[in-house]
Image 1: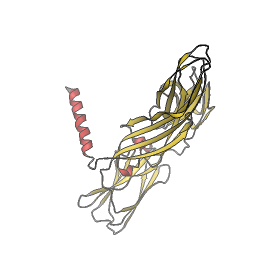
Image 2: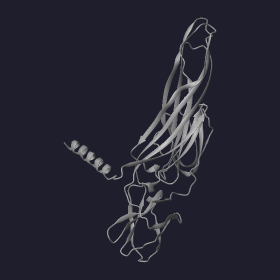
Image 3: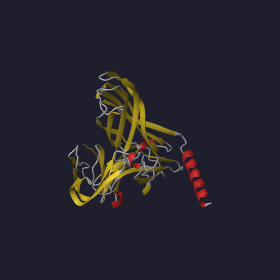
Image 4: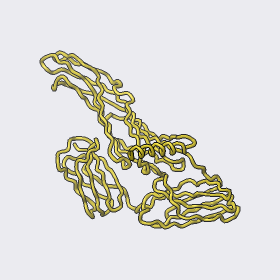
Length: 374
């Protein structure tokens, strides 16, 4: 009975949340298109979601792939062979915003060819995979997608022959691909933006201080300004409420000292209430209050076969997970109060793309770097 009650309450809450989106869900997409040989790494930088647009509800990451492939196959056996020619395609991508790397493999059959000894079959470049979609949908923990910067995705593709019929044959192939990589944000724009607040700014004054400034072109008597902060762009916390200056044009400056739990990306906005009770909001302004350290790491050798070295960006308690392209953790290492570390592979790693997921246990920041095992 208790379990049924919990499910019912969840359904009512979801319906209520949807009903609050009075204008209906909207979406915005950022994308990029690249063409390459079919076996190249890529780095994509796509915009984060602008919280001034509304409340982010879900994120879709998509890679639409097309592959062209041509080949020449010769039977070098002393007897006729039925060869089946196919193309394998593997797509992997990783980012610090993803909890696990994405990996997907598909197989495209080209055909079966009966070849006599020394007979050759040749096919020119033709489309063998047409607009195949790899995608991830994120509906929880969307905070890392919110901000005014960009998100980096490290992408690795592999196109290869997947033939059968005989282990001995002479073969050559050419390939190219097109990748349409995109991120789509669905959001609800359900709050009223104030149209008489100009030049609202938030800036980092020091490691512990944020300065907020704004101008009101019609600073009405009885108006109040509630200053709010957020980490995720959805849950806002009150800092202080200020009364209006009762001037025609009000100029405001506010100094806010953060605490240790706020050393992260912080958003600030104003909740404005007029004497009539009407409520509006300023846009959200974001300030990076994390420690001023470079997020860069140096990982070498790459490609590798037995170990990698990582030069960290500071001395700290570092935890390193080696993750395969299918998301499995194959090794874990701890480096306590170190500025660099050597990761010796404790078992043989198959050739392919791997990711070093690096965690700063002191600041709780996460990073990721791809590398290749040859």
